Length: 358
Image (cartoon, rainbow, N blue to C red; front, side):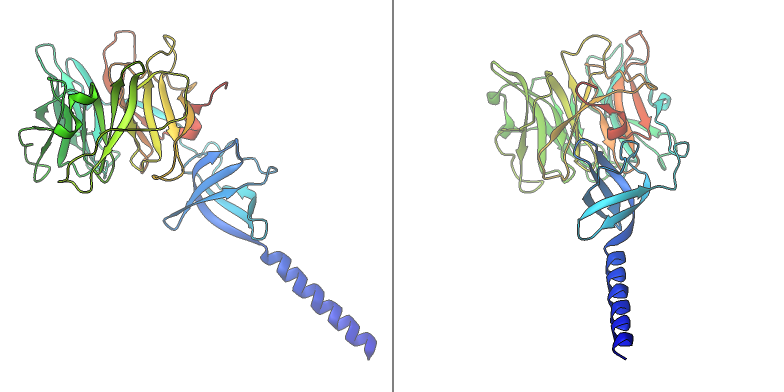
């Protein structure tokens, strides 16, 4: 009897232990948002929430790409991803595609593309051969696979930014000051611009504005004596409040002099142009951060063996729409120097950015 009880207890112990061991590893279905190969971490999206995971060094994350669907084997006690599986083969993953937005092409130089939060309305400026000023134009599309249509000339402006709802525009005026204009809906014209007096020329030359998604933070380039162009920002408590004085945007060094700063639609990526890059080399720089409130880290330079990315120093203003993995920018596609609006479909910062020394 004692022997039977001992064997029964041993079986129960083994059964409980086995079930506990099995329970330590769970499967998680998710979509890759970003990959940090240097620190062996991945950020995934699952059920509308974004989470960062540590990954075991035995798991290869070098070929993972943003937008890729994966199954994670996650160890609950170790709090580490042990294994990553994906139903997508390399051939299934969409390759980046460079597109010239011919439907927006015009005689003259085009630049500064800005999109509304749904990605369906675009704004850009054109300076034609007979124009004394740059003009902001707009167009719309039904969905990301449709052509832009219904072009409309809006307002004269050089550097400019538009709120995510398309109802406010902040621009650089010919007199060197920033001004704002508003409208009631997307079909209306903008009001006559009013100078933003609180961000005046007493702070030096300020240009290339960029609004945050909520419209409460305004980023821009500011010429600082002895330092050249530095990125600064101002904030306001609501859309009718006054802007604060300029504050410096702290970024880790990239090794380049920078200008034309923009933010991605989720505000986790910062793009800008390198002014002093060697001729013929990529000059579109990228910073990234884990959350819209976090500190930016230098990610690298946009480059690709398949795509020749020439972001013109005269107005790249790269706008990355993360929801559809589209990168809009102004650049050249040949040696003519004619700057056009370009779009990279299936763009992934982690896949198309080369770090320092690569």
